[in-house]
Every structure is written in structure tokens, then in C-alpha cells.
Length: 272
Image (cartoon, rainbow, N blue to C red; front, side, top):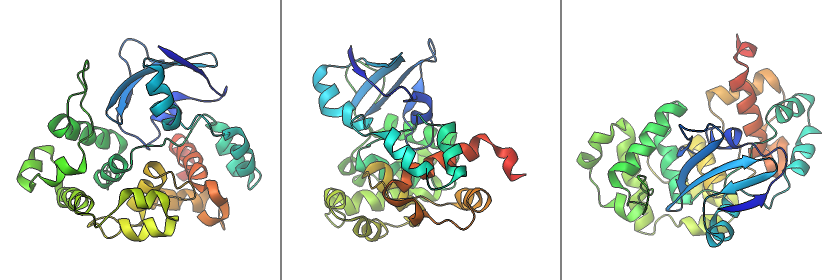
């Protein structure tokens, strides 16, 4: 098992169960231990003091997980900068200081957030995990499957997706995969280019509007200035930060969004 020193405030539940990724869960035996899959790899991890213990090789630690959990970024600095913008944002950041923005695989994030439309987190988790179970490759030594790549998905039909029960989202999933496979959407170019390019490109996919594009760009392409807005977030912004707009939060607006989203989700009494 590999171990790495982590910032004192890094919180696994806040990061892994805040609606940015859908394949992580606490283990039945120990709520402090989490398991999940990303980049075709299975991982169990737990926090022990200031040490994050990961059941993986040092090669995978250095090659995959250090970047995935964004361990090189100074979140204390970013949190301080965001807190200076508003007392309410400061309170939200202090409520959930352990949230980090994961660096997910672009295709998985895009496809997952297409499935997320008009769904709650529990339902999205079910859809994503069933999607992997039905079409993903087996991860050796585990009972989990990898997230199916665009080539696999592009070869499917609407009939193939019927058992998934993804409803109106099914043609959107297929359209995304086929546009990626055919080269109409170049995911790696979206990584390299400015955010505006990605917003335009992703919205060429059927069913991908501003909210899905912003989520995919933030969580799958690490475009940290993105600020996903849905009805809930618009309400939260109007209630908690009237007069402020996403662009007011600067290059780390996506982290501000996570603080506001998590704070609002845990304080429903504010919206009675």
C-alpha cells in the first residue's frame, strides 16, 4: 500500500460524494475506507491522520492517483483567495474545506454528466455503475469494471442501451461517443485549448447544454474557471450571494461552486 502526506483538511467524503464523480463509495466494513475505480484501475483508500493510504503500486500512485486527487495543488491558498471575495463564500468554504476538484478522465466525465441530466446523485451513481457493469471491461482482481470507452459505446445501438433505462439520454450518449470516435470532437484538444473552445465543441453533441458542458469541462478537463449552473445553483446564488456572478470568482470559480453547492445541500432550511 502506498502512502502520501496530505493537507490536514483533505476530506474523502466531501470530495468523493459531492456530485463530481459517481464511482466511489465507503466500504461496508469501514466507513473511513473508500473504494472506486478510475482510469481502468480499482482503488481502496483511507485517511489515517495526515496520511492518505492507497492500496496501489508506487507506479500507479505517481502516474495516476497523485494527479487524480490533485494532490500537488495548494487548496489552502485558493480557499483563502475565494474567502476574501465574500463572507458568505468564506463560511461555505470553512464548512467543507476538504473538497478538492478531481482530475477525471475526460470521456468518463462527459458521458457521466450526460447521464446526470434531471437526476439526483443516487440515481446517477446507479446509472453510471450499471453502464460500466453492462459494457465495461473487467478490472483484474476485482468485481468492478472499467468505464467503457467511446469506441465501445459508439458500436452500441439504442436497443443495447434499453436495459440501462437511461431514457431520453440514450441517444445523447451514442451521439457523444460517435462524435468522439469519428474525430468531430477531439477531447485532447479540448484539454489543450482555452475553455471557450471546449464550451463550443461539447455543445455540438446532442443533449449537451451549458450545464452539462460546464460540468464536463470542470471535472473532466480541469477547466477550473467553469461554474456549472442549474436551477438549484441559481437559487443558491440568488439567496446566498445576490449580485455576484460566476465570473466574479476568477480562475477557481469551479471550487467556489463546489463550496456553495455543498453548503446549500447541507442547509436546506436556508431555502424554505
